[in-house]
Length: 335
Image (cartoon, rainbow, N blue to C red; front, side, top):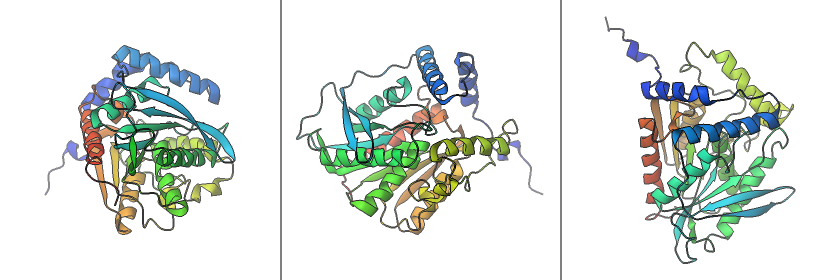
């Protein structure tokens, strides 16, 4: 008879548990109203960042405003790897990135996101263009994917101006931002076919019907029914009451009729994250469509723990992996 081991079951990484315990007293309760929740969440981010000594590296950056046809304009922040903006002939790779926050919170002005963008730009020697897309429920689908598409198009059109190369542009995003990044690759295939060298998806939400959520890794302290209810609440804020929109490919890229012709992908998932089902199913869908894809599952990690570089060893590994992939863009352009 095979031996039964408790280590066969999903377990929270001990460093994550210690880190979460340290942060918990710093977090103020978030109110129910969207604007209040957004404000307190940003205050919590600033408080945790200050307590942990997280500071943004002193790299060059600049904010631009991009027009969006039929929708609100979107701010983008350009991050250069050095102290000064890159010259127009620098020819650096560019990553267009969309932050995560359940479509309802976060942004490029959050301390944690700003620090992450600057660190990645510096360590990988690339330009990052981060889009500050609008929040739900005040702004709903398709505002966000259209804003992100416009940010991507603007980047391609102005690549040389900001020191990049338009044949070495990648797109990426985390969580809800991963949904938007994948949507941009579909929109690009349908609308323009600009070369995209890589899609980088970190714990992405890719099926807003919640049909691929994987609850097997959730602890008994967070039953799957509660997780599904919370997920549906965020989706409803984003899509509105017409949940049929959740099946639209630009809302749920995993449900697109075809994934042929999409760019190569690196997909990172976490064992204790219900969204791992989305990311891993998307990796299979891309592979079945002939798209080169690498998918990595981090054991013992949660939805947000891989953002805790400097405090969670697995997060440091994820950072080095992502930086290595971005550095590779210096040598190889788009297929």
